[in-house]
Image (tube, rainbow over all chains, first blue to last red; front, side):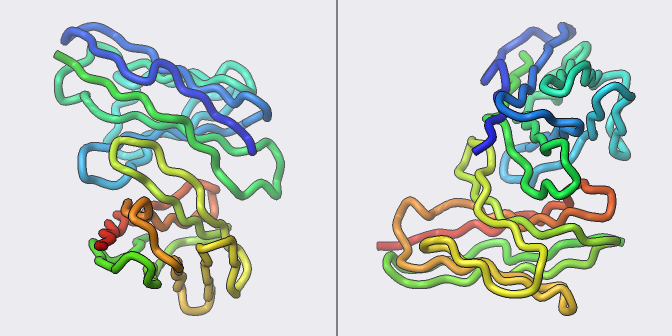
Length: 117
Length: 109
């Protein structure tokens, strides 16, 4: 099946620094990728929809200046957490959907666990 | 508004059968997904239903009734490794996923 890879799997950073997380579709082209955040014992929360070649669409309550999303190619989307703070510590997951109209399944990355000290 | 309801927690016995229900109200419908998620890991895909009826895949089956806004995930011959959270998600008219809060399934010997 299709594979989505995230990097890094886990990262620890100091408060105030920026962290970039990559999401790659390894064997298919994805015009749309989704970024989620999951806090402990809670469901996945959609943060934004990343569209190749255009600006990302952010969900209500998600700061677009803090969570920068870039989808520069059909196989790569990046999420940058700028000026990270301890409350940004979470599990960040991306998913990708194949670039065809009848594509239904979403393929998920392995997730990236961010810990901000 | 849009919402997806599923039970918070269920308990079942190893070797038995369990059915996890999901009801939804969404604007638009482009399919319903079931995912399994073990603690600390990303969700893994179990099933996708877009037409009414039952889809069987090994020990897992998923059912959909679009007119009733209802789906269930059926797990047979339960194994201890099936202990996980099961997430129901609906793809709305804009192709984004609307997630349920998940059902934590506890399997007892």
